[in-house]
Image 1: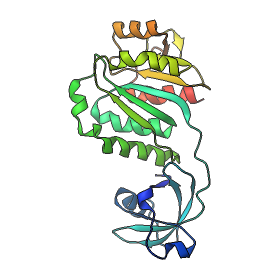
Image 2: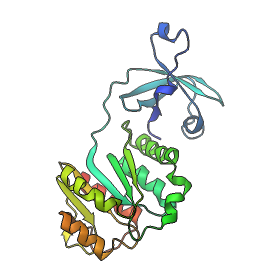
Image 3: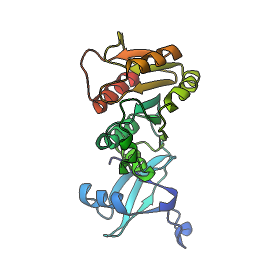
Image 4: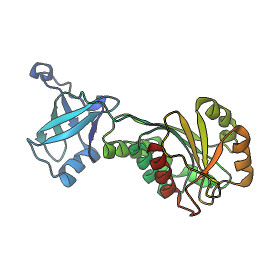
Length: 245
């Protein structure tokens, strides 16, 4: 956690804080444990702080206990890094990989993620506890904290078997290009993108031929990282790294 993210509900509105001239944030839970156990911070130390959806700056610890950490915030006037203009359309992976992929995507600047159902996605994956909104949000927040970013990605779940097919025309219309990751594709994945781009990444085993044909008919291009078949979590990071170059 390279950035301590604070939300509106963390800001201290107790009587007297207005007169002190400095805003304060009161943090507990997982963030408190990180401050105490990982950062090993103490009263008087300063930390990198960001307000969710806002700016970044520094905060000085003025109180630290097992229950909470209180920070006196300096100006949070630094802008977060620029977003990556990529919409990640991801066939829902195995539940144990969902969290790490979401964290990586958020850390790399993706601001819109669509989790979709395809032929090779097990229906049971959608029932996993990792798909609860609070669990998805936690992983996105961890990715932001890692990369010193404050803008939470929007995430959508397209659970129906035809939801992705129905969404394709809108994706094509809203983006300058739609790329489909496929190891058998002959076109290399682009190195750097400037305009809105949609990136489709399939499940383990890839998209079916019929799915690839439907994507091509909509105007999507098949791109590849080379002949090696990568795991989904590896492929997502490699693809986004090229598009961000």
